[in-house]
Length: 201
Image 1 (cartoon, rainbow, N blue to C red):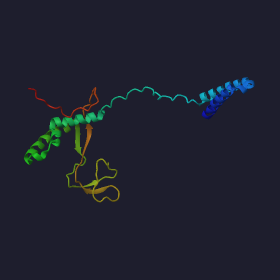
Image 2: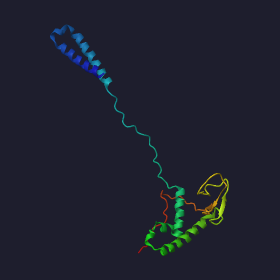
Image 3: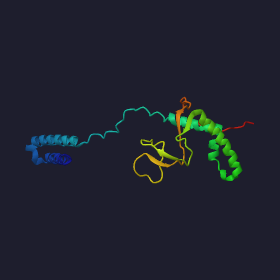
Image 4: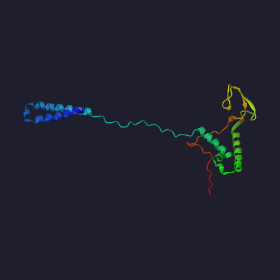
């Protein structure tokens, strides 16, 4: 269409120029009509060649902002249990401290505090008992249909259960869990394991 518009404009110019020549007097009416017709053709070609205005970016519908990520309730309760082990047995202090700076007697004394405090917490919230009651080192039989969560078989394993072997570790299990349920906090952070203690002066 652009070529047609250019040709039509050139022809309008040529016909208009021809109309100015004195010898074109008898054809003046025809040349004027041709000029008008070519001008109309040029106008139509120019308008048809125009591109529609580029569409601006399409506005997406407003979507509500996603809610801030909240700490998982189960994660918060695990942190709360760890906080109890820290409060009663200083477990986190013991594990996060560099014990290489202390001698064996100091580490042993600290381990007694950790042991007593953490054992108290476990006894308060779990009913823990051994998977097997035999003494470690005793010959036992692992029954057919045993639970894979209660037995870990090591050594040469062949055939099907029941298996005979030596008890290396009695294992532990619990029948009840009584952990406190947390009320969700307003913010999305996990609770602190232990608050920073500041002595004011």
